[in-house]
Length: 268
Image (cartoon, rainbow, N blue to C red):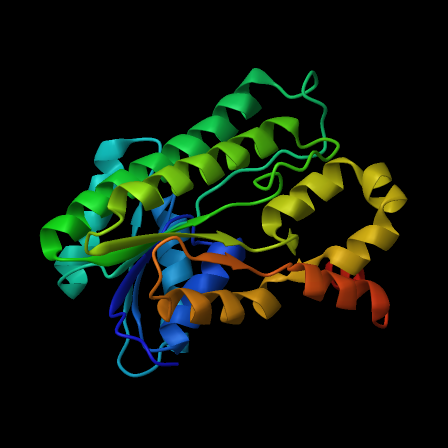
């Protein structure tokens, strides 16, 4: 893996795909700053991640509410203090409630998704862009998700709206940084079994049972996807880069290949 990346901030990285991204970055010899809502969770994640580090890479972390710009700025400052700068910032923090209709989604759930997914990514992008511009350059990647391509899926109305909005936001940011020392891109990680997904599945087993065949075809484990995404991000040189796991070709191979019960690993 050829790259000049030295230090990386990954928001929402105490578990799920964010944790897997942090682990792969450390295995590649990159310093990593992890974040999550709880300092206990951050410390636990950092403790699990440090033994994975290669080439003298180090991990540090800070509890961060990404909806608060001041806390996001503190996360940037922590990366600068620990590693002398931030070369790559990954806006990964997100919350999904994806098994309810729009009418059934509570006001608290709406606020959490809009706040974390949209405001969190906007705050992270602003802080990283300002810091990288002052430092002479860097890369920002926004992790999108289901619905960011405009597709409509049952139970994902509010969540998909936030991700579709982030697609537009990211494209606008790409145009704004054109010709500068900062590059912006987006990541579509596909359909992953994460802690959040398992929480949703446990709350609506009937939905999982009815869609089990299709889920088993399309879903992936975070450990299988993270290495590919990390390699693409750290070697990216193009402003506006779009990194996708579940491409048309990969999806076709999934439908044509040998079927597996991927959910059995999680006791489903």
